[in-house]
Image (cartoon, rainbow, N blue to C red; front, side, top):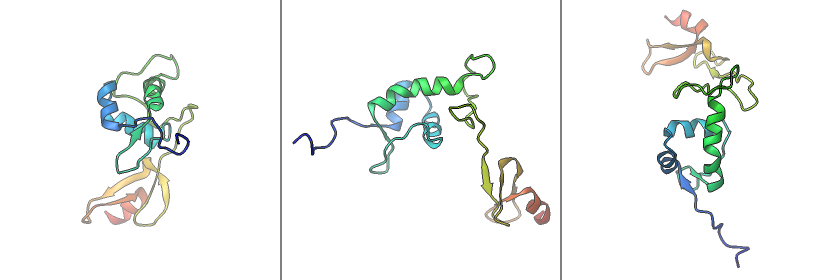
Length: 128
């Protein structure tokens, strides 16, 4: 019967884990969005297993390490655009005006429209 039953592991919610570990919920969200940790979402809430909860402090500590000296960065200055293998991840966006995909550094907001449009720098010069 145990072969066909539900797993005996009690999943924990993101908010309760953040409270238990003393980290901001946003840090767990960033770990999840980066694909470093993969919780389940059965009913609208992200649920983590006990094994994943045990890994979270070491993952956050690893993300906070400085590349050059190996010491942790101060809290709040974690470089989240890095992958676990220390390669830089290029963040891209899609221009809502021309449809081109460009690096985030070229993103501008055209406030002339309601709601404002997120456009590339080239289109922003044309619209403003």
